[in-house]
Image 1 (cartoon, rainbow, N blue to C red):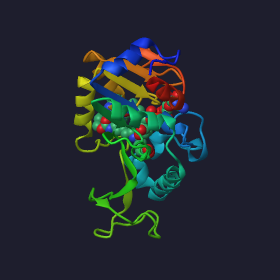
Image 2 (cartoon, helix red, strand yellow):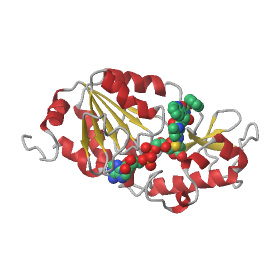
Image 3 (cartoon, rainbow, N blue to C red):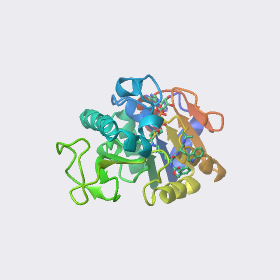
Image 4 (cartoon, rainbow, N blue to C red):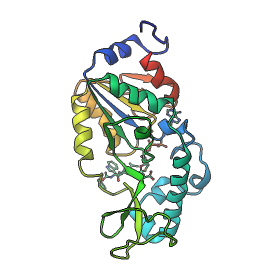
Amino acid sequence: SASITPDIPLEIVEKLRSARRVAALTGAGVSAESGVPTFRDAQTGLWERYSPEELATPEAFRRDPKLVWEWYAWRRELVSRAEPNPGHYALAELERRVPEFTLITQNVDGLHRRAGSRNVVEYHGNIHRTRCFGEDRIVEGREDAGEVPPRCPDCGGLLRPDVVWFGEMLPPGAVERALEAAESCELFLSVGTSALVQPAASLPYVALDGGAMVVEINPERTPLSGSATYTLRGPSGEMLPALLE
Ligand code: BJW
């Protein structure tokens, strides 16, 4: 295990080997190599006409529940057919190597768990779960029930995906678990996220304040790039496996 990929600074490799606590924050870029479109780059399909700020809000759902439901139904289909990529598998392998590893993902696609990650904080929920818009309760097995959107079997209200929209609170416990991990880690990876959406975007700064090394992995510059300890400019499907070599 002595061979080290030349692109990765030795300091990062050494930190990875010695750290007892590591945290990683992931975004849509990690699933890009699985064929899942990101939110803010090269616009495809429904993203062409609508920005996430227009569709991922409770107001949008109230205004046009059918449009919003169909956007998510289309994405649910797409991610069901997608497979985890080498970046997802490398993060799962990292969890097996590090004593305390927390993966905080903004992705709702479930690909990290499918790749074998276990200690996952789903910061923005999960697209495969459905809940009642009125009662805030998880409802199972109604996704394909004729009406669009389907209705709650108990109260008759509209059903929605169990994801976090702009202006909404994060899932119970998610903020606390993520802060705890960011505050106490020795190494924090920010991978495939534009680092724009709060409160996720503040986690790398929490880690920096706590003395952690912060490594950003992204082919593009982000608002975090200037503050990160190291930036690895490249796709996560190549950079994450290289970290493990
Ligand atoms: C690659 C790659 C490859 C490409 N390899 N990389 C403080 C200040 C200002 C505003 C706020 C604030 N606090 C709260 C707010 C309001 C708001 C907010 O942040 N607004 C900003 C836009 C400024 N936040 C909220 O409302 C949050 N709630 C909250 O804070 O509650 C309390 C509260 C409420 C109201 C007021 C104040 C407090 C909730 C945010 C929920 C975000 N939800 C979404 C939708 C989820 C469901 C769904 O999937 O549809 O989450 S929006 C969307 O953005 C989604 C994503 O998780 C999130 C982040 O996007 P991400 O993952 O970074 O993707 P992209 O596309 O932006 O970037 C992809 C990156 O990958 C790029 O950088 C590429 O370069 C890179 N890449 N290929 C590696 N191969």
